[in-house]
Image (cartoon, rainbow, N blue to C red):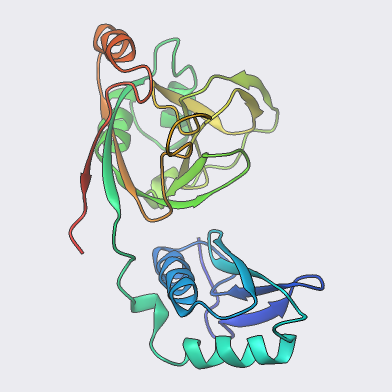
Length: 249
């Protein structure tokens, strides 16, 4: 994935009560770092009239009350904050967690691993070693409640989407395309390749924190056997045996 950074960041209006700050026209580690750090800085600024701050892969969205804060005034506040540092080199937000998630790669639970491995020029064993050792960041959460986009993975995994949809993958499915994982929080069709399966439930209505992950968290999908996967799912119906630890600031 390449990016053109010469004209960024860009501030644009998004409807009558929205503002979008974009750091790149393509995903990269640095543009996502800028997005996460700047989004937290906007929240910490607590500007009157700003009702919502959310992040995508490379942009920060603000929803604001234009009876309290005019477009021009908000743009000035955003430019002043942008000038304070190089956000692409900024520290990531505090409070992030590292999740280690037991995962079955391949078999009938990850039926498109062989296809993905072949496209990447690897054997299935090499693919499992590569994907199972990758430490990926929660780049953004979207499409469905609690559903993370994770990466970036190495360039060898910059695989295109499928030309046809898979009719359905289950909750906890680990799918792969365009140097990213998506960990499905609900059953859904997908154009991404289903390479692994976890017992992780990213969205659980009724729990104190219905959405388990936060943008900026990190994940490792540790390869396990089918029997261990089954045991983890019985012992931990919420997260399939996943562990988590705080990432030092």
